[in-house]
Amino acid sequence: MDGPSGAGKSTIAKAVADRLGYEYIDTGAMYRAVAYGMVRDGITCEESDRERLASFLGDATVDFREGHVCLNGEDIADRIRTPEISMMASDCSAIGIVREKLVAEQRLMGETKNVILDGRDIGTQVFPDAEFKFYLTADAAERARRRLADLEAAYEKKKADLKAEGLKGKKLKSLLGPAPVFEDVLRDIEQRDWNDMHRDISPLVQAEDAVLIDSTHSTIEETVQAFLDVILRASDDAAAQPCCCGGCGCDCAPENAPGTDKEAAE
Ligand code: DC
Image (cartoon, helix red, strand yellow):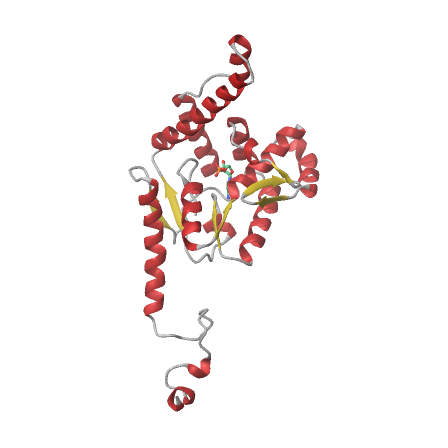
């Protein structure tokens, strides 16, 4: 599944994976993990920092434990959703050596099990032969409204936590920072869309054979259902075909195929 920031890819992919018993891989979280490490180690996206970046990537492991993204074994899932890391992830994802490393990891994860991956280049680069491809999008203003609601909830939670620690007045305000504002969130989304769609390597684009789903006016459940309809309809169509025993994954052996001696004997 590919699509722009804030279209709801991870929520939908997770729900569809749950329904189908597949594993969900959030590839954006992998780019965010690299971005987090870069910010922490003071590595920039400038050409002049490329050797430091290569050395950081050479030592880094990015994987998932119980659905949480880990950098070098450390669970950093609750530190990668800030505006700073979002922008850094968008910037570092335009760098070839970052993409090479993460795409290789993603292919390994997807080769041996049933998975749903979401990202920007899954249908075009990572798994061009994927069984199903989707492009999930929504209006930029609607995406910004949804992202704002998440940021506001996080802001209120942080405020309550700080108050519970006894902080108030100026100290509370300075630790809390400014409340999220719609215009800033929309500008960030539009900036990231532009970055993701205009970078030289693997820009965000709908794969030719991907099914387009627009969630602007749909609830989460309606969107999940739209995905399942496509997948289940294709499975029903496949089941309605006569068995071919040509490596289709069924348990028929060639000698059991219709019209063979074995079938006639039975
Ligand atoms: O899905 P997300 O917003 O968490 O992704 C963070 C950034 O990572 C996004 O700006 C683009 C980049 N990304 C990418 O280039 N390729 C992917 N497969 C996934 C994410």
